[in-house]
Length: 265
Image (cartoon, rainbow, N blue to C red; front, side, top):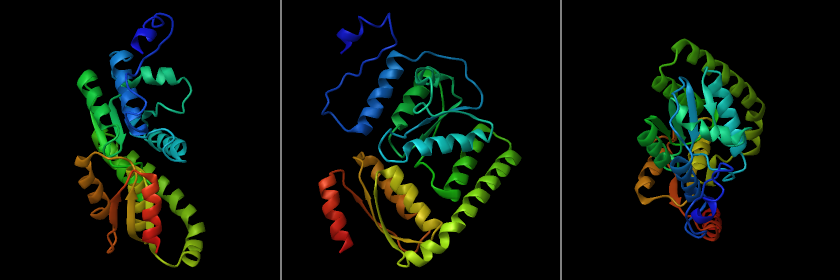
């Protein structure tokens, strides 16, 4: 509450988020939090060339979120960028303070975090790049690196070198599991149940790189209606498969469980 927080503002860095506990889910909370940070905590800073903030990855929304952020940071740092993933880092308070110093904000979601990036652009003039998901596999990671490099004007030679090294490591690792997948999972049809960003990344990886046929994709985050056509396009037009999945939007996990059983039969 503002009336409580204001008594401590002179002693410690502190913000408040004016909302009821039942107003939304964790995705809404992510945006409420960052809006409060922008309004109450951030101040203009000189722009640092090559610095990138990562937005759109909501903490604890799936089991690999920390690993995704760390691996993405490692990949982008090989390009010579300074990457602020904000969460999971030491000196998290300093990472928040440094947000306005970025040359670019990278949003890894079709919707969550986009409004935050728009507000940062409005207040601090920081441009942003919205990518539909955290990349999964060599193709998606290479595509993101090229898109980001184009926006930041990075050296083509350096970018191609980093991509070649990352793809070599990725595909040499995949060789070890390729035979097991072919023998142990001979039926190529798959179903994916996940939030939109995870569902897009996993579906594209399984279809575009492993050759599986996506039959149904259930998207479990409570998406705004206006972004749903974009999600459907990502899961159909951008999936390299003759078999396009049925896309179902359902945020009620009880109904997700029932629908999953129905699809399985």
